[in-house]
Amino acid sequence: MKFIAAFLIICGLMFSSCKRSHEKAPEIKAEKTENVNEEVSQIIRNQIDQFKEDSLLIIDSDTLVTGSWISGFFTKNNFQPVWTNRTTLSNTADSLLKFINNAELYGLVTSDYYLESILQKISSFYNKSDSSINITRIYEVNILLTAAYFKLSVHLKKGLQDQLTFQKTWKATSEDSTVVNLLEMAMKSNLILQSLQSQEPKHEQYSRLRITLNIFLERIGEIKAGNISKEIQETKFTINDRNFNDTLNEIYYTIDSLKKRINQLNANIERWRWESIQSESKHILINIPSNTFKFYSNDSMLLYSKVITGKPETPTPSNFNSKISHFFIYPYWNVPYTIATKEILPKLKKDTTYLTSENFEVLDRRNNLVDPSTINWKRYSEKYFPFRLRQRDGTENTLGVLKFMFSNPYAIYLHDTNSRTLFSKENRWLSHGCIRLDKAKNFAQLICETSTYNFNTDSLNRYMEIKSRIKVAIYPEIPIHIRYYSIEADTNNVNFYPDIYQIDNKMHQALQNN
Image (cartoon, rainbow, N blue to C red; front, side, top):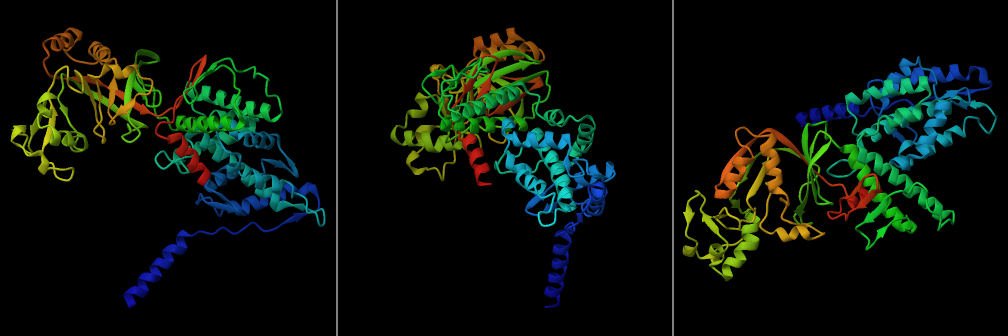
């Protein structure tokens, strides 16, 4: 009993130490405007000390996660109310409020940045009962505007959703404390808008999607205003929407259709904020919704190819980075367990010659070859299958004649195929997760020209001609990035692709439910 009591006391102490509570600012009034700034500054000084070591701050119903940054900012500014002058908002405050009010132009939500609370408190600068000045409301507006700026800065730079769960999450790290200096410079130069825009990703695709988003939002405004037939002058590109049956040269959607595409744009803009691709001399970008492969050297595209990616029930992992380390000429295909038991085993039970006709070998758990005719396949099932199936190398191999390997926990790779007619299909989400490459030989040739030792294109051609299996090391290894962008834009076109894995929809629903 003594042990239990001691344990409960310790837990209570731990809980009380973790649950910090800040004292709410006292309600202070002033009769004259001359002393307002000094009075507000004094509250800031008194309150700041409470949360300089704690990032969490609560003002009424608003929870602020940047308390320590707010403390640092006002300490640097000698605790002055930088967003107000007596009972008047500064130009920088007006600029920030305008930005917040237009947050949807950036794929963000206005209500995330305390706008309702700020406006309500601004309207309460003067007490209606006695016309006195409410110093506390002015203090709170200064704190909330500062918090809104910091929150916007992080959201614009890093996004606001978790990359796995899609739930709202706070992504700031200690490195992001530089926004304190950013705000200080913005205040001095009166460049709030420009400072926030400097936090946005520098990717060209991000910028083009933002422009498209603004056009769509403007179109909704035109429809609501009754200007149904008015063409938006900024629309100088073609919209190709695979979700419709035709190509649209003007934006003449219904409001509901526009909102669906705006949700899709917001999801893609958010994912560009997650983007981690750095400046690389060479890299590969595979986009699942468009089923495309792009091989870049610096800013030049060396190779463009169609790909085949995973079915919705067996999706290719997205938002994934690795490096291609080697490739095989005339590879084996080691059949994954699920394919062996769910797809091939039922065929074997009906036709015991299936393996021979499809050029498969059977290996036991010790990697010894087993004669398939000696096995009673009806004895085995998905739960018990002590064999490994391997398709021999050759032009009829499912992997084709080339397989490109990169480290990953999903057992996927990039490969050629013996079913080349599938590349003529528009909807190419057909694989079990691996990625089939239309121009596999072209890619291998480029690798041999730039990223191998003592293995050039002549070597490649010779081994392919004699149909000899070989492993070729790649150095330097080539970064590969697998992504999920359901909208792509260039100078003249905006292409909308099907949300085949429902990631856009899941991201939107997560925000709606948050």
